[in-house]
Image 1 (cartoon, rainbow, N blue to C red):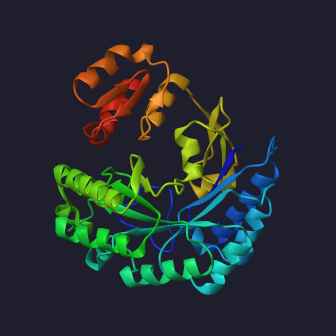
Image 2: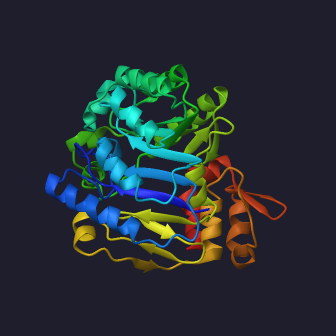
Amino acid sequence: MPGVYISYPFCAQKCTYCNFASGVFSRELENAYLQSLREEILETTWLENPDTLYLGGGTPSLLDAEQLASILTALPSANWTEATMEAAPGGLDADKIASWVKLGINRVSLGTQSFVTSELRRTGRRHDAKVVEEEVARLQQYGISNINLDLIAGLPGQNAESWEVSLDWVERLGSPHVSVYMLEVDDDSRLGAEVIAFGKRYGAADIPSEEQIADLYQRAVERLAAMGIHRYEISNFARPGFESRHNLKYWRRDPYLGFGSDAHSFDGDSRWANPETPQEYVRERRREPHSCDPASETLMLGLRLTEGVDTDWSRYREAIERRIAEGLLLREGNRLKLTSRGVLLSNTVFADFV
């Protein structure tokens, strides 16, 4: 069965590190966007009911109960094996959470990013560790115990000591799933653009080095494993049984349908994408075909998983054997896996399959 991804690109404020097509937009645009989103869902021909749902953004937790119901009631299924709401800490009151539960949301991904207040403020985040603690308890009170906590390794001013503070909070809260992202430096974010320009705004001069970020990531791998939270994908860690069922569809090339701006879809054979910005999406709801190379995708996506990938890789034999010799890939029969070093240099490995 396919998964469903709903894109809500609206935020209360734009974080300095964010390189997604999201931001602060007018209420008029939001209303037009939600109307277009519902129409796109209703116009879809469903060959079978979906089983997983992921509301991402942006900050979809900003949706009120009526807006959320308008979106979800347009879908053909309400019996989700997993239905995830991405949420920014702060503002998750009892009424909001109760409305989520009523509409079938059973998993929440909290964009914590850090539990150190100084790091949060430099990136434009308004919450603190106590807010996260209170909202995790509130979610659990309403029956949502499947909670993911996001962390970013490489924020301005972050160091080994402050990273331990964030990891201590993760252990204290007992979340069954944690995502650890290494800071991406590119010109699609304000922070990244400032780093590239050798500027100082947004704390750009104070981000850790690549080697330090790698050390932070490795420390997270160790600490989380000691908590019983093991890496199953490059950036994702979970207790057994709490792996994200929806996201596994991406890495295993299972079908999924995306709705809203910058949403991508895959039916098992073909890929397509919606317009990138909400303005473009409202003006013209077109779907652009994307190229799809099954052999290349199977390797690049499957190698992201700790389990690796069992596939015919003869087309890339020379490159793969070179990466095995370099200690970046491990071969077990016909199955390939990234080594610990390969995880840190995964983009180098994946470039061989483009």
